[in-house]
Image 1 (cartoon, helix red, strand yellow):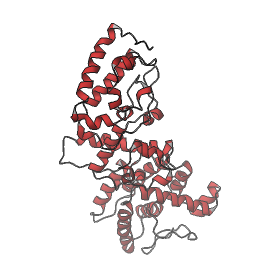
Image 2 (image 1 turned 180 degrees about the horizontal axis):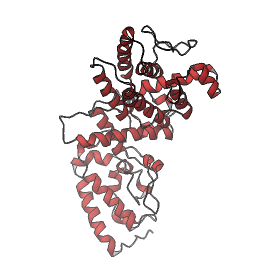
Image 3 (image 1 turned 30 degrees about the horizontal axis):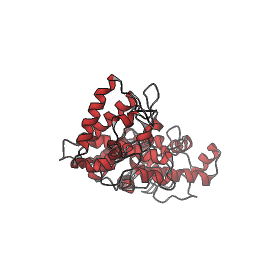
Image 4 (image 1 turned 180 degrees about the vertical axis):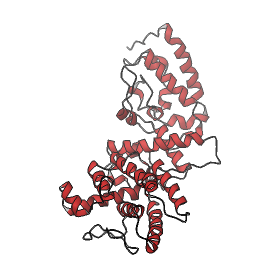
Length: 367
């Protein structure tokens, strides 16, 4: 014969609130809410939730009396209070924000005594509801075509196979399905969640301005592109200092976020930022690398820039034409040479593995 757990006086208020919530949530307006498992509604900041109940649907929990819930050895006043708070969140969630798919389980865990959540745990604790909101933000802004590699914090943080995958690849899968995908381990899943979360944080600020639409771009790259658009309208070519400040250095700043130290050393040598412009043969000797390996690293630079700034090739080629046109009528200046070196580094035209580094003459430059 089971004996009901006696409810302390301090819990009577929670019991009354629980009964009121049960009556509210059983109405037809919450039918979709009841299909979701409790873990669907969990946020990373939630504390002391009754882990034993997270796999049950809201409807199943509402069939239990407060005495039945408090009978669990692991559920005391604090966990019961956390459950009631979660039910309040569910009751306050509009039906339009609840996807029609079946109840899904999201990974969840309690925080430590400090109340802080480790970053790794944070991504493990994302709820299906949060994930659905992040997906909706991407879809509503028409960002499904955007590549993950173009918008992520650093290409070093995500596997190379994700660089050219679009956000749309993950816009219509549940969190449970995402975590079950082949080759999608924790690192890959966390990178995807992190990016979707960042986009949601940005676009949510525009909810009150439906006439506006967000255009995603990296800050450094966006500034370079706006500058290039303005330069292409000028009659004259920019100075060496302006080229370094507005084009070369911003691109190197972005490259530094995405590439290894060895790649950065190669880039600086090829641009002559710490001395004369260095040939591939000289760089290979100085870095103690085979020339083939140097060309591989140069290919990585072009791949990184192509992912981060896909429109850059067109802008750089147009400015290259302007540069070559000027050099037909006048000797190549230092500004011409630094630009041609940077253009060939970031977006090579016809890279020859045997051609030595040269200077600009008669409208042609050899690299």
